[in-house]
Amino acid sequence: MNFNIAVRRRRVELIGLELISALTKSNLGRNKSIIAIYLMAFSDDPWTISGLANAAEMDRAIIRAHINKGIEDGEYERRKDGFVLTQKGWIVCFRRVRKWQRLIHPDVRRFLYRFFKERKSSSPLKEYFMFILSLDRLARIVKLEFSYVAALKVIEWEAGRAGATIKDVAARTGFSYSVIHKQFSKMDEQGYILRCNGAYALTQAGKRHSFRIFISSWRSVTLKEWIVALKMMTAPP
Image 1 (cartoon, rainbow, N blue to C red):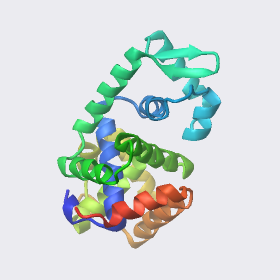
Image 2 (image 1 turned 45 degrees about the vertical axis):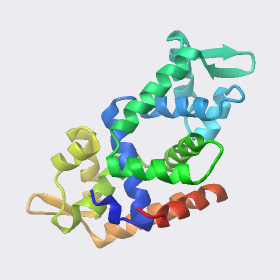
Image 3 (image 1 turned 90 degrees about the vertical axis):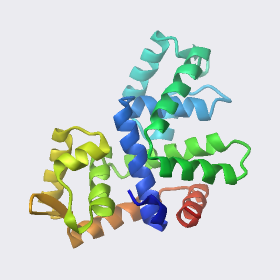
């Protein structure tokens, strides 16, 4: 990964790729982690299942199942007006977040730490959590699987003209060979990738498709999210 020379859209998408890959390799589970981060980042008031579903663009049944499991494990507490983290829940969730962050590429981790620290926010960690939640919500809005996005970005930004094999992308992203094979087959049928000498490279149609995903995703962000993204694109490496 040549992260230190990446700027603008490439930088933001490489950060997203790294967050997805680290989360997948941590085996923590996407939905479970996102629900926990919402409860950690916005802990002033209890969360309802409906509130979490609307904020995270997540199905209520999925949230209800995770909340009930968290209550059984002693990590969540049910109150009259919603759910909150217990003391055990705070400790467990912070440990999970640390495990996830340790798997992020050192260059990306250092950039994120410095970027949010230099924003002089009253809570840099909360802003970082909000950035993670924004990326997850956007992926749900455009209805793209993390494995599809991760495979596409590896081929576009890291493989180059030489292309990438299914095995390489699976190892890079943490997804299983069968999952990446499924996404490669889908992109191949759509005409977005082309096989050459055993590896797959992005076609011109694939590059246009990737750019459309970027545009359609960021049409849904708030003004505050746009400002953070623009500053991140142009900040020193």
